[in-house]
Image (tube, rainbow, N blue to C red):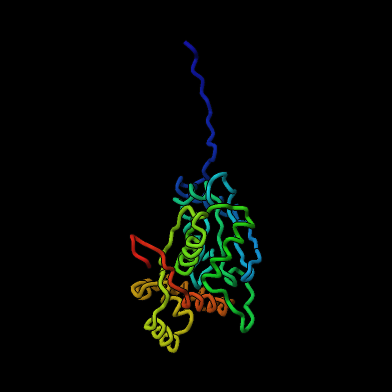
Length: 252
């Protein structure tokens, strides 16, 4: 009978003293996110320059995930919490991500000069092919919120062969009617731009019930150095056209 020998096994990733497995997992996740800071690019389009940030490495025969944020936000404030979520790590490891910032919404963006003609939402959608051409990406899965959802839907209608899927959150595919227009004008007389945008981002129930979260975003928008740019994006959103796409046999 062979003599038994004691073998010393060392953990591949030993825990720090007093660190629980859960804490170690969170620390590893945070470190992985910090290491991937993304690469930021700008490209000229027929409607001005657009800035976008790429995370990860392109995978052969896989679409890129392309995100577009809502009014009052940029890609970080809109999507970073989602992609830092633990359950999203498998997606992060298997897909390259392209986060597009609407013109003038990127961090450190200069304020546009007085009289600057901000692109319409249709024109913002027409900037996306320039981004994909620059990166040599052929297909995407679009993830958009609010105004960004509208922009990606418009892009998909114009370029259906390049879109493998869409995740559209809080999309309003309809142009504002006369009643909406009048209500918007009246609201503008009594409310500031930050308050109107908060009313767009959150429901009345959320506005009255989640004071800490609302105050956080109120501070972000109110003290944004590019608030004038945000107002231009907001105006473009309120001047959107009907998307006119079919859903279940109906035209929207």
